[in-house]
Amino acid sequence: MEAALNQRLTLIQGPPGTGKTHTAVHVLATMAAQGRGPILATAESNVAVDNLLEGLLDAGVNAVRIGQPVKVRASLREATLDARLEHHPLQEDLAALREEHATLKRGLSGLKGKERGMAHKDLSMQRREMQRLEQQMVDGLLDDAEVVCATTVGSGHRILGSRRFPIVLVDEATQASEPSSMVPIVRGCRHLVLVGDHRQLPPTVISDRAAEGGLGRSLFERLIDLGLSTHMLTTQYRMHPSIREFPGARFYDGRLEDGCDRSERPPPAGFLWPDWDRPVAFVPVDGEEELDAEGSSKANRDQAAATFSIVRDLLAAGDLEGHDVGVVTPYTAQVRMMTDLFDEGGGLDEGGRFHGLEVRSVDGYQGREKEVIVFCTVRSNPRGEIGFLADRRRLNVAITRARRGLVMVGHPQTLRRDGTWRAWLDWAEELGLMAWHVGRG
Image 1: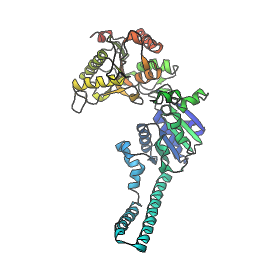
Image 2 (image 1 turned 60 degrees about the vertical axis):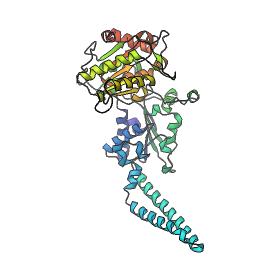
Image 3 (image 1 turned 60 degrees about the horizontal axis):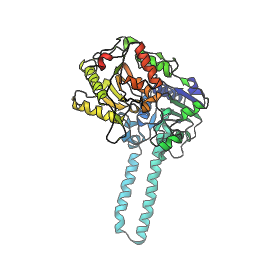
């Protein structure tokens, strides 16, 4: 906190469950209370900006959201600039001007010569007056705001004009490409706070050419590579200590501490945990992977079936509801296959047996958490190829979403060809967490 408030450049690293956004909101609220605005608070995604906005409003900060209301969480739309403009006291004056303008425009057809020319002149004057009034309303709302919230790219919106922000905070900074991060920074930033975690997923880059050009690296990571140190949040409040154990040691040099007790994260019923004191399990499945029809993604029927059975039994025990469980997988073809399985096996829609259950890619779960995560790894082949499962950051995200229980489904012989996965499997075997009894039916 002290560094973020006083240093001109601060990198805050927030490992999973350590409250990155909570910390970001606290920094912003403290700065606002000190009257240090105007402050620009940004993040790469609309969801992350909404989380910042929600925290600021709860803290009593006068924050306004830039962006299309349709992309903003329904409960927060009243805090958007558009919504505040609708309720502005000058809106009545503007409505009267618009009506006057429309009336004059309708009467144009009956005018000729000099009268028509005068009417056009009046219309131009009215347009300018309406624009002036609209700008006055916008400027007033932005001037009064202690914090302006927008996505990184959205902070370049023309409605902000040439407005400058001496203080800029970027949440999710490790998911923003460098050009994206620069959009808010070039608005006169003299004090920058970047909040993120370079041990989790990097910016999403679709183009190979863009990736080769370095757009897959964030400004946060570049600054670390240049020797800047981070201020790491070291207490995690999400995971059962056993779930935290491996990622804490492997990805965070053993610096993560637990802010929650084992008794606060009881292992869920409905699954035969190899060790009930450690709600982590690896379920070995033999079936081979396959390519989807387009040949661009991979799926695994046997692993999908095993995942279905695990989730079905967890929900049948009555300890959890659909929204408490998350199914994570690295491949879109597997997402589709498992979504179809759950739809056919009871239904994901309201009233269905699996209503509330989310089946998503690893990328779709960053920043999220569930009571139980079932991670279906898909890869199973004699060549030991695991594709982008070899990305340590992807593994880190996948295994740190769970609060009370983590179940991994996969083919151990394939995964063992990779060093990080081999380390995880060795750790699981050493602690007796291999659920052979589940994998064999």
